[in-house]
Length: 242
Ligand SMILES: [Zn+2]
Image (tube, rainbow, N blue to C red; front, side, top):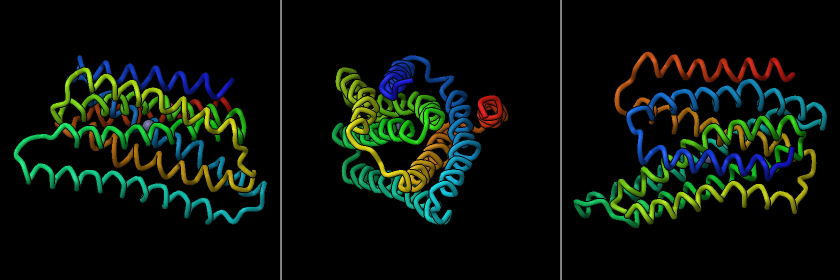
């Protein structure tokens, strides 16, 4: 399986999410609930065991990839909240949504999608199995990425045309990210550190980004059940493929 092929699946998932956001708003919370479960499940049932396996293999102190995990979590937290602070100030200065703020937030999402693609590419440098696992997490949540890109652009009074252009950019970003990893080979002892960083990034997206969004309108037992189902789904898949 080639990393670019899976990055192409990420492209399709992002595009589908964006187009979905333009039409079926009422079911979004259910899909986001399931997605959050999948992402958290991938971190716990697949990435973490893989990190510890690699750490043993390359004789890396296990606390180092865990530091990378927390750094990844906090870094994406900081970037996202700093953009929100900017957005909040903008709103208090003028009582309207400014298209450039939507553009800035959407561009941050594009940067994040590039990291998604790098994750797939470097995952395949560890092994085909890790590459597939990372790709699963990326493809599953890229639907939410596409959805957020369109949502952000439209919420800030951008035209449908600009929203679609930004969606296209966001969809292409994983392909560019995966392609960029074909030129570099990460030294094996760095792989557990990188996977730790990526696990922190995914954990943030799943727990602090997608999950709150799934419950933003009103919490429902069905959404919670779908989140548990998403995590259980990943658990079952990892048992079968082990
Ligand atoms: Zn993403």
